[in-house]
Image (cartoon, rainbow, N blue to C red):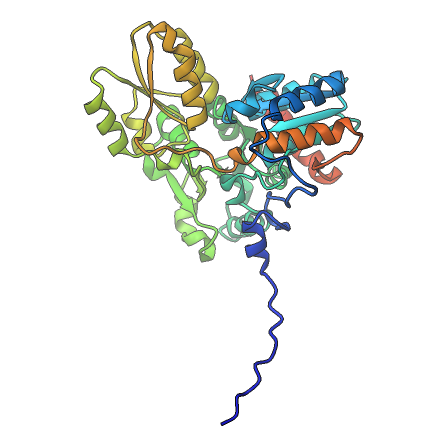
Length: 394
């Protein structure tokens, strides 16, 4: 009996496998490649001292931005904290800083590069820190959607409005087609502006912010909204459905805010009598409808600052921020809990950890530019046009 020789297999990892490992890049996605070089060990007891020393050596040459959802170990080194748009504007207001280190995710660093000068270099400590929501709308998918709207005979009546949480490519598409960008703070005004320009809105990429703003703030009905699924032919919609709709919502969502449910709201009200439920508008419509207060990250912070001592709050947003606010306001007698009983961090935000930040700062201090985020000129021009339309909103 003979044994057949098994031929040697030349097995190559797929692009998706490499991407999930944090290696290689997907040209249709905003996520990037792994960091080159060796990172310090996360158990290194000198990490804090090393970060301080590198930051002091760089002096005014570096400006560190920290998003509210970052870990405490990282946020302690931020020169300013805030939401994505506030931080991008803060970076633009510091022209003397040669390096902008953005402790956030990829689309945020892109926005900072668009709004800062050509002489400034925007750096992301971990290029694999992407955003699942932003990845749910690629340039190719949105271009195909526009073709569907054109075939339905409505494209000329549609104004795109894209959430800040989108890639530079999507922002550029929005600018090119006469649309604007919005944040969770000004989504209502952006939609009002859009309906002054056209009859319908294509809202990208977060369906929940679009639906909640249209129904809760503009008084539309749920029937005025249709959901465009980029993974189905024609978005899973008929031409008639598209023609009847006022809001064409992209099938995207935030993986953190999308986990909150009506059960979460009912459960916390049962466990904590008299609790105030405060949620982000990226949450599902039924959660927003059941909440006491709804608003952006900055709104949430200001609401808790103004809250009376002894008040109780359940917050529906990212856990790093909720925990930080709970610790901050505990001395004032304010009880602040996470809306869901299951702990949930933003996994991509948490890719920016202290070892990555130390590696980044030490590399820059040694004169080595790492992990630069650079948007090409054409994309930047159209994306900036969309951002400028937002800035011009009254």
